[in-house]
Amino acid sequence: MKLKLHWKILIGMALGVLFGLLMNSLGLKEIVIDWIKPLGTIFINCLKLIAMPLILASLITGLAELKDFSKLSKMGGNTIVIYLFTTAFAVSLGLVLANIIQPGSFINEEARSTLLTTFAGDVDSKIQAAHATQESAPLQPLIDMVPDNLFKAMSSNGSMLQVIFFAILFGIGLILIPEEKARPVTNFFSGLNEVILKIIDLIMLTAPIGVFSLLAALIVEIPDASILGGLIAYALTVIFGLLLLLFVFYPGLLITLAGVSPKRFFKAMLPAQLVAFSTSSSAATLPVTMECATEHLGVEEEVASFVLPLGATVNMDGTALYQAVAAIFIAQVMSIELTLSQQLMIIVTATLASIGSAAVPGAGMVMLVIVLGQAGIPEAGLALIFAIDRPLDMFRTVINVSSDACVSTLIAKKQGMLRNPVAKEWDDNYKATNIKK
Ligand code: ASP
Image (cartoon, rainbow, N blue to C red):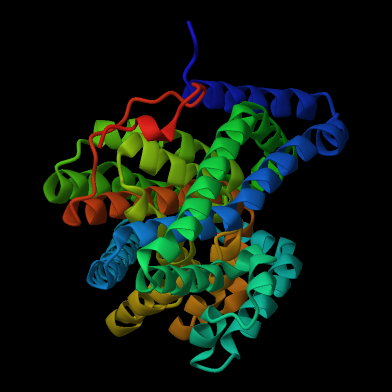
């Protein structure tokens, strides 16, 4: 019997953890870092390599097929409103949980000073990176969205919004010119899109090996477990909140607003969720997210190609919830009483900070510095959560990706662009043209 892709990835992850533990106990960490970790890095690089061309080709094809501005602006407006709503909900949930569970009360004075001194150095670089973002002009994020050179924008994975901007402009141009002139261009991008989707299939064949090496490397690089002890309550609060989003909030939205069963959603999105967990990067996961959503969940390309790249860069519910819990936790450990208005301020700043966070590992922690600053919590408190940030990053990235996929389903439903799911196996010789619409 042929194993499904998500099973292969899960087995790869489990073996990676076991292998990492074994090599750790044999004192052979270096071998994993020198010889195994590079395979994971190659896997992530392949995914990142395909992300920019995919955004360009799929968004241009998607917009050309929309053939109508009013649909685009309606879809854009709805997407932004729902993204903001889910993020603000996630932050509020984080605040409520942190106030009820009080994870800060589980840390004793000794653990507090050990953490603060051990990670003080690591924290400095994050604080500097955050301040660099903060010092820019108020309209800088808007300016940053508009590239002055397409090739420069395409050459950096940090410039996804710039490429989205260009693709939208290009798509609008295509809609406006006569159809016979537009057709060859549309055909070219739609062919390119097919090629890229096929490349993603090929890359995903190597996913089990990729996640194996990523998890093995993670295990050997994890800091001393004794330091983590006091942080368990904090970590569990974040994870509990994330699980509530994943298994209660999104299924609730899917059932009530789109009539989509959670089973269908999870079955379709599991490969993307596992890759998100292993890579801690929504940007690197984007090609897989797009393929899962369009070909397994049934979201039409016109919607997915717009909603998902945008979501990967701006919609980060997992990061937002984590920033809220982390801010309250640090305040509790530092014995800082936060007033209600300070806490409400956190809802605003964490929502904005998660939008501003890049879709790469550890970005949420950099933007957390800004949330702390605004709430009057000492930034040095970041050292308290440093040791456990990487594992939490893995969890929050799963939520970030799931949220994008959930919103794309809601938007597709609203636009009448949600197909019945297509039963397609990743490894099959599949032809997109066979999709029954
Ligand atoms: N790693 C997260 C992502 O790529 C961002 C973060 O919270 O650090 O979605």
